[in-house]
Length: 211
Ligand SMILES: Cc1cc2nc3c(=O)[nH]c(=O)nc-3n(C[C@H](O)[C@H](O)[C@H](O)COP(=O)(O)O)c2cc1C
Image 1 (tube, rainbow, N blue to C red):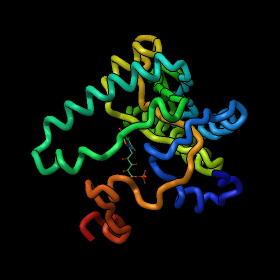
Image 2 (image 1 turned 60 degrees about the vertical axis):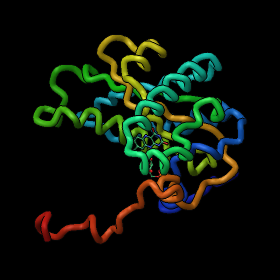
Image 3 (image 1 turned 30 degrees about the vertical axis):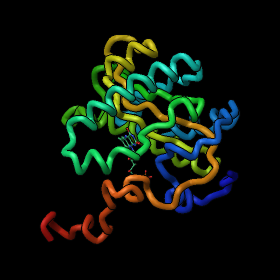
Image 4 (image 1 turned 90 degrees about the horizontal axis):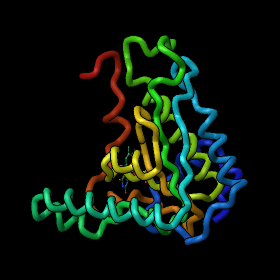
């Protein structure tokens, strides 16, 4: 699917969390690099750029992560009331092996030294910065016709060990990245009846939160 040349608004509209639409081809290195460059251009608190990207293509690593995620999915399902478990059952929550490429985004709180400008009263601004890099990556991938699926069903310690993150470096996300047949028009969680979105007018407030 070629979606290149999308305006930023179009990319925002077309973007989806992709689980089932990966073609099975592996994203080529030049495209992957452009997507990572977009991520690396994200704003960051104190210009700390606290992110790193571990690109994973080794099939045994993809399989090991998929097996771990399957266990976490089963644990989540077992904790649901029966009606929610039935709704959850057909929902695919990852495309780890099908995408052919995983990108582990990690966060280094030590990056930028002890006095990060703007982080003194809000330590979370560091993680916020890493998440902005992910959003840049996601939109750039969409403009390239490449799908991204964020997987968060994992124990952070397991993922840190799997990809050899040094002590103190925190995994923020596993992103499944690969070419897609199409982007769904409706989020999977809406299509499968798990949860629908809320209208913008409910999210916008004037002057105070209650207004
Ligand atoms: C922090 C975060 C974690 C997520 N974790 C998962 C996940 O583990 N599995 C999954 O299928 N989708 C995951 N998603 C995708 C959301 O389900 C998805 O963004 C949401 O349902 C809206 O759909 P859309 O992204 O297609 O608009 C995650 C998204 C975010 C932002």
